[in-house]
Image 1 (cartoon, rainbow, N blue to C red):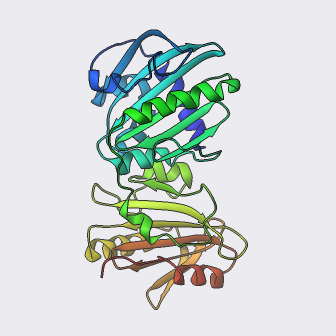
Image 2 (image 1 turned 45 degrees about the horizontal axis):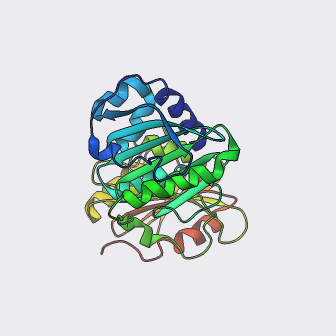
Length: 299
């Protein structure tokens, strides 16, 4: 579902017709002197701030959840065919990392801070930038990787990953499943929870969701960190009344009941709200909740 969303965004970007703006962002684009055999096709285009809505319609809302600032798009010709580069600048490295986590299925070349390549699409993040280099011709792998390396080398500084990652368990996470989110649009693309903001997400909250299989059947885990213990407790009480977990009962600080695909539970751990969903029985959910978070929240 994450990949389908990005392909939809691509179709919008390729229709854009305005040019403009930021020489600094354009300066990150790969040049023929840096990557042998490539040639710019047309002018690069820069899209800033709220103008993204004019071109991406509803798709822009996802980027604004991650505090999008501007994007630069440039088409290229290579000896093997056409390729496109998109460079997105976010306000913080954590938000560039979040956009990157939408699709990490594939191989992971050493480009930027994390990178994924699969079937003609290279994505990576470094600092406050999220980058996509792609082609409909899957045979362009090497030129795409070369362009990605050229861009990454021009980004001067690396960024810090989100603090909430220290709460992840060291074992049991399904590979490539974690998604870092700041709002319900991003979360619902990984796992549909509700049309409502049942986790009380706001500017000061950050979350991570992943598939967790400490035993056999994968569970869905959602963890949200709030600015303090009071906000986490308020969010927990609100979530318990949301009917995401039905027929729930409270025992020893754990709210346990039925979820969409089995059983689910919720608890607070300091400034964290922790959800475990879709267990085959309450015992499995309770056991998983007991193992999370790995290091806990603020106390």
